[in-house]
Length: 207
View 1 (tube, rainbow, N blue to C red):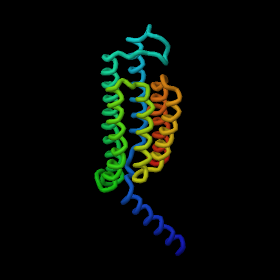
View 2: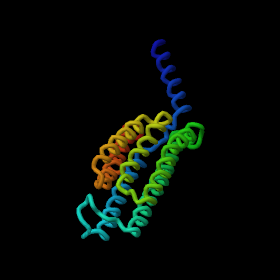
View 3: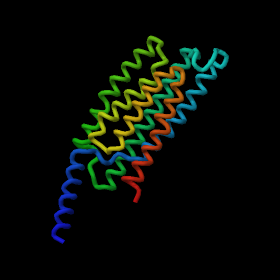
View 4: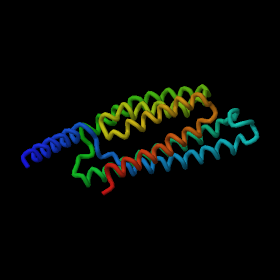
């Protein structure tokens, strides 16, 4: 009995340390919904590209018009915005249920470490778009997002690290198949988000 008490005390101390150093209120449901938004966005992007380029050659040799680029940027911005709002809402609700603070030192560290690679990648990708080097946009979004997840994973749930590694691998493979970026984009941001979001939900949230 005494040994069990000590083990329980050690487990409680460990949990308290994790709560103080990690943002554990990240919601798996928000990951699932982000994946769904991404798949819808990929479908809209596919229709946007082919509505203007149906007769311009094979998939690898499509010529995207300036108007289509603006539409694609609007679609991507909408997906990011919806994913961000959803993530904040469900993570806040989860924190409330667990009687945890939503905005504290751990969540701040999470955001800072996530945003450094994301902002760097975003600026770099905008330069590529300006120079009309579009073939690398999808691979680089996967790579920089993956790096952001890995960089921030030490401040949140462990599943984020594996999501980031998967994104990096997909981004590297995508650079080998320039012209099929939209397919890899849907696979990474869509199906991988849904898969890892479901894993996190059933592991940490489902009662």
